Length: 376
Image (tube, rainbow, N blue to C red):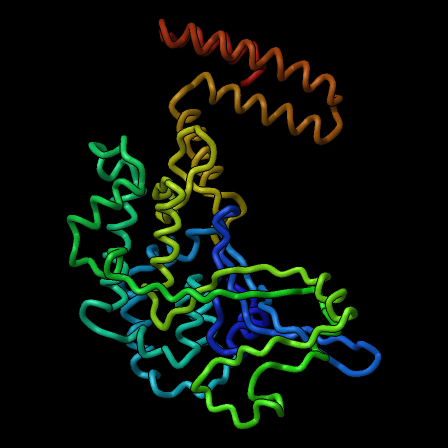
């Protein structure tokens, strides 16, 4: 769950901007802010965007798609009941905790804004229908097991087919979407002399009667000192986006996943989508769910291991002996060296007995291994 102090910083500055770093597969939410500095004659400032929160690409899309329909219905009704009541305040109360617990930052920033009503819209843009359409589009393009016959195609190639076939799915069809991108030019390097230059706009007394009918094309007056200072500028350009609806934010994530040819799976334990890491096959994610100590992947491995042990008498006997010997080394009744020597020998014998038992199962084999381990 996101920290209230961090969320308040987002909300308190109006609707924030989202920025996607494709190279690092991250999304951040930024706010407009100022950095003040003193040049020994006066205080000046430079405007820039401050990163407030950052999360992995796909996280908020996956979290939204995992929300039960009952939760979406409740949120839609809640948004409708309070659609005209937001007064700009962002209280740390039960309502705030509930919105944060949904773990979809887009729902949060839209609810605590004058765009709250968009979360209560019925019919085609209801939260449930948004979920249905994005879930289908994500699977169509990024889940190879969804349409195995198209598994040889890239996500972008499948998305091209999707756009041609599902022309009326206008929330996820790139041909129907208006993207709200804004170009930001920023410099985090204070240039003192820049604030001493005459502004070439109506704030300048020279252009006091400027009516905006023609452009101002006078050259600025630049002294050698100013030119020297301007050479210290370190300017960057970024494109940030801002929407007054949920599907705009979700589409930015979906389209980025498609462009990066990301493949997704649904976790067999928590049932949330995830992006598999590495080349090995896995059906479980690395999330640690509330109340758990281990990730879904580790818990699934433990469960598989337990099922295997429960179904194999040789492993059951080995586990009994291992726990007994581990307790002895923990109690310092035997040394770490002796425990390792026992473990190496016992595991080698275990593997040999499993192979023998697998080809010719027999009670005598189990009894012999049990006697070897010293089990009663």
